[in-house]
Length: 310
Length: 310
Image (tube, rainbow over the protein chains, first blue to last red):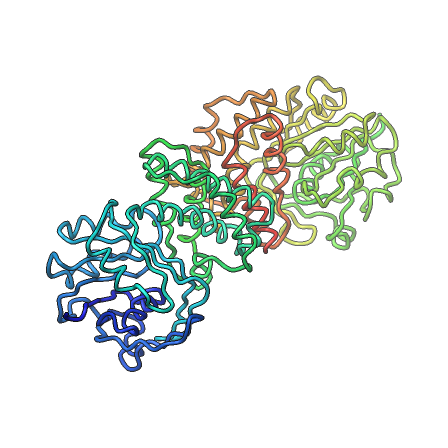
């Protein structure tokens, strides 16, 4: 059997970790498209420091653009941040040369698949949700801590040959818990239940850690109410999130060592925020479906103004 | 007739302007209690640069504390900012030596009179609302621009001999439009209709000017919705604010030259904010009366966290 070919586009910490694990385990030939760290990765590959075991990831090819990739990939991963100024379909387009290439999105938020689904209607599209603490600490150097979970499923739900095959590829790979699910939308909303409150509030509150947001005071109340709004919008979109998820999320966050949300880290570093994927698209869904979401809309307006002012 | 005696406690820009106008017009003997600018005011009095005519205000006495005031005042003005850490009743207490002294509060917000009313149940309490652009630009130097309007009325509503007499004192004084009203609560809520949205949003949005908040986008929507929440809370408290006040306030603000709200100016200068008077007390009234005010509560939680973090 010929090697499975993977191209990882926008290989930041998360993309390099998961597809690097596949490569290191000999499960796939993984090439990468990287921009800012091109020189370092071309020269030395990725060095990945992981609680589940350090490893080196020497990509089968390192490119500046998907157009340079000479093969026909089985899987094209898109693991760049979900930002409006980023044309996700355009980034991968040159590498989508046949309907047999499956596309895998590892991104946060809601409504991030649509542009890709529209651009490549003949390709299988796998949407995935990662729970991982992975940070790029230097060019080509990634630090991973805590969870390393990747859950994927067919965009729109249901079975997927490409999805099942991907689960098989990941099966038994050390340092990765991967799985195929038939209802990925549910997982996406469930992650949003955490991301939507904590990410914006950490920034708007002047740089709050998770502990400072779960202090039993008005900010925690706000986070809880934002979660309730997420539940209502999800329900209007046909995704039922159990009510118990709200206290569970708060409890979990309260008991976890305090940390800065990824949005706060991005904000403090002056990088663009995933405001649209995590907040804006959800606000638009709420409006479209006539679901009251006043706190969410307020945070969206404030966060947009704040980042524009910066 | 003996001269009317006024003591102005916490004589910042607003207090110095209005009571200084009384003194300069020879309508009253005005002494002041000042803290940070004591030396400058003691030496040179106030220099007031005003669009309605510059003037000097040489107080009849300059004190560090109300206890030093040797007289029995007809009016004690309290014109310090409404801050929780400021014991407003305690500040004026030593100068309230008889029931014939009327107390005049010039402060923003809601719920600011209660502590004073409770502390001095036998004294007439006049609550007042100022529309004035007055800034302390140097020790003892005040710059005034734009409006110079002072509206006062009996706390709790109704007629007041002390109030009518104060209106007579101000009558014809250049650079002051002052008037007694029997429903001051209505005026207070009407000013809050502007203050509650624009002050917090200007800070939370990262330093927005009035023009940036009235740009027709989501921030303006948020401000309009916050005004609607204020209207609902006011109505539950027995104060009807006409619905037309909302578009009128937005229109007025949009057409005014852009400026920074007082809360934003205070925030940028690292000074404490009137969060409780303008936002917190209103949120508590909303809860008490079961009026939904989700955006207000969200802004209150965020603003409190933000200023605590600072």
